[in-house]
Image (cartoon, rainbow, N blue to C red; front, side):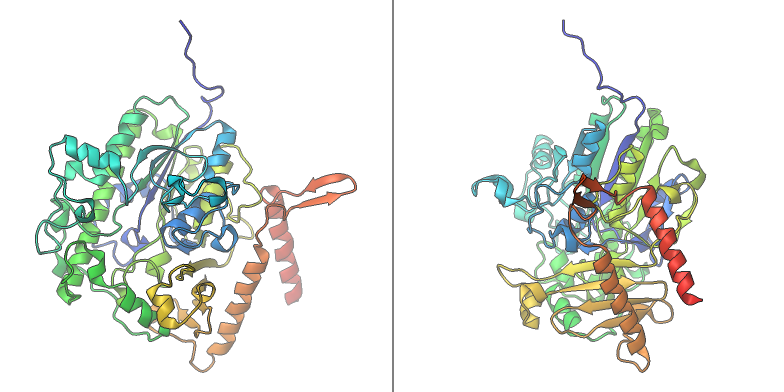
Amino acid sequence: MRELGNAANVTDRPNILFIVIDQLRADCLAGALADHVNLPNLQAFRAEAVTFLNHYSVCNPCGPSRASILTGQYAMNHGSVRNGTPLPHDTPTLGTEARRAGYRPMLFGYCDIAHDPRLHHPNDPDVHTYEAVAAGFDEVVEMRLEESFPWRAYLKSRGYDLPPYASFYAPQGSDPCDPAFYRAEDSDTAFLTDCVLRDLAVRPKGWFAHVTYIRPHPPFVAPEPYNRMYDPASLPVPEPESVKHPFLDAARRSKTAESCVQGLPDLAGSDEAVAKLRALYFGLATEVDHHIGRLLSFLKETGQFDDTMIVITADHGETLGDQGCWGKSSYLDAAFHTPLIIRDPGKPHGYGRDVTQPTESIDITPTILTRIGLSPPDTMDGRDLGVFLEGRVPEGWRQHSFSELDYGDPISATDVQASLGLRACEANFAVLRDASHSLVHFNGGLPAILFEHTAEGEARNLADLPGAAEKVLMLTQRMMDHRMSNPAGRFGQTMVTEGGVKRSPRHGAGVEKGASVAKGLRESARL
């Protein structure tokens, strides 16, 4: 009989559990909404991990945000700026790099990565969906929003009379808070969690699981009891429409409250309907929290909790009616500000700590790679968060965060793009946030927006006020500096010389040394 054995050198490496929640805004965990939404497992987990309070996705929506998370690159560098815009096949990802350390990265869910058509025949199914799998990952359980065949097969085996898939997420009634047709124990969230638990129960130490929950992403519908868990009348109302801007006007018309619900085309965007949709969103968030609690309990019960690096985040947020906007295709903080909680069992000194320095979604992959003994490739723009996990602050850490959104379509113009009369290459904006202000720079000749983080915040655009021009200019220059300091290019740190190929790694000790030199030069300039 052939002997079975484990892969070599797996006993010393940690398990990796990397959870991405779709469309969970950060203030549900810490902020204005945290007192209104019940997330007991995530809140308890914070005491055993490090929470990054000023964490932002560097791009939206789903596909681009996940491309940035998994490649560690700004959207301006990986180029997959829309759902359906391909990611070049040779771009290093968390999956491809983790394999260098002997891991087999497993995907439970979806990646929303459009594949490079240069590698595929036009008839290949992988170039007929934007929900394909990122390079390096094994799709253990397919839970793509537009497919979800394993879940559908499971529901059928449980005796459900399945509706057409186009109506799968419709409430069973005329009220948006009427329940889904499936029970809570059979929901998409429950099914995915069950699959993960069954698989990990037989995995040897040294596994790598990327778990992606579709909820609380719309269509908003929830099984009992989550559909009526929250009283809509008791919840805070959205921030009112107070800012006038051509982009905002077009975005408000394009994405409305009723577009977040399936099967209720006549739903009016009344205050009552808006409150119900917000209550459903909170219910779905609580459902996800419950099942994440099951994963954490499994790790503790099986003695793996202190052998597992756990990362929990979201791909982007949800405006949820703020400023009259819905979805994530907005410059508002609610669309980009996301939770991030990391527990490294090898760095207990940071447990329970809240980090307030600005961090970005591109930092996650370099952090995981560094933890498993790899130097992130030079293509990655993000930085290792390991020093924060130790309870310290890295020297020379960034003083701002940067995000982008491309809202155009080169094949068929989007509603917002067409409304503004822009070419696809002009239908985009970038956001830079420093300690006191946020600047939104629009392409296509649209006016800039400037917010102050205190006082009225995003409720007031300061860009046209007397004295604001200097701040707008300063942040615009900083945004240009940011772009120039993060150029695309696999060989940016490589030189071909008479002595052969020379390389100065972008990541590692040289990063901190370079930051110290730059800090010294800035201080000298002030003297």
